[in-house]
Length: 357
Ligand code: GGG
Image (cartoon, rainbow, N blue to C red; front, side, top):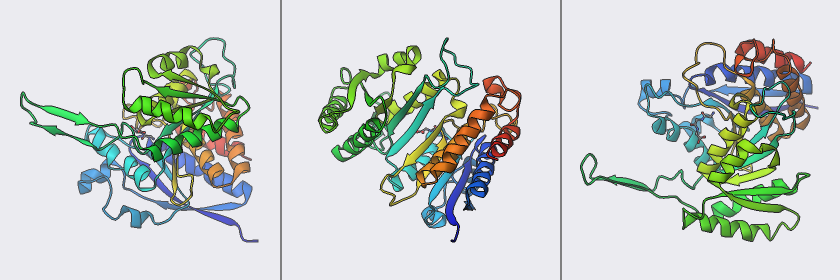
């Protein structure tokens, strides 16, 4: 029987993305060899600020044609604020992908892994284990608005939050489905409907309507201010947390930080219909402060590779990568300095590939 083959668009992006993506690819190749499939890689040098410096845009106009129809996109990080303002680099790359490919789910696991020092006392590995489901195509990340009378005393700046019934309902359905599939069957909705008195009460209404279709799922809603405090105090109480684009973004950085480090946190930007490719990237950004030093933690990128394989149906390979990550994180000589280890990026990546056997 012919081996299964997956076409993967590989986009390292900026900063430490260029260092951690090769480690992710190393582990993907090791997993492919062990589990009997092949990875066909197509590397792209755009969607980064170097490309912007050469061409005056983050991506070529024909980027979709150049990417073609891969099975998935494996992305590193974006942003180099010394040369390109962050909103220009983000809107010129990642947000294009999320919108053009309708990757409306941003799925981000938060887990306390063995060996990772947790800033909260008394937490055992596995005691923190939940998912943040972030709406990924609308909400506060909207291009509706503008600036009037720029640079004058009369300056007015407006940016609208966009919530559509279609957009809100589909992310809530995804989150409730996920909660229903888990043993705790619990969902928390992030809101701020006491202060943001038009869009957020609408979000709450849709949550209530959706919850009626999932009688097995217990749910609550929490205002984002107290919810962030609860993340810090009791991260072990959560199961599935669903939020708008901005709230989900904040919660999915805070969650991993409470479980030790954002350096190991992965994410999937998912189009559940499969009509367009999904994109997998670490939650962390390009980290200009440590870029080029070879010390970045590659685990967020490698865990993203596992999420990508899981999405592609290679469940066994994905589980094996996660177990190799756990083995390596437990060993200080093999994990990186951000989690009190002694390894550099490449040593850690090679150790995870080797642990796959
Ligand atoms: N690998 C993730 C990355 O590069 N993130 C940069 C960033 O600022 N992202 C904001 C977002 O995900 O909306």
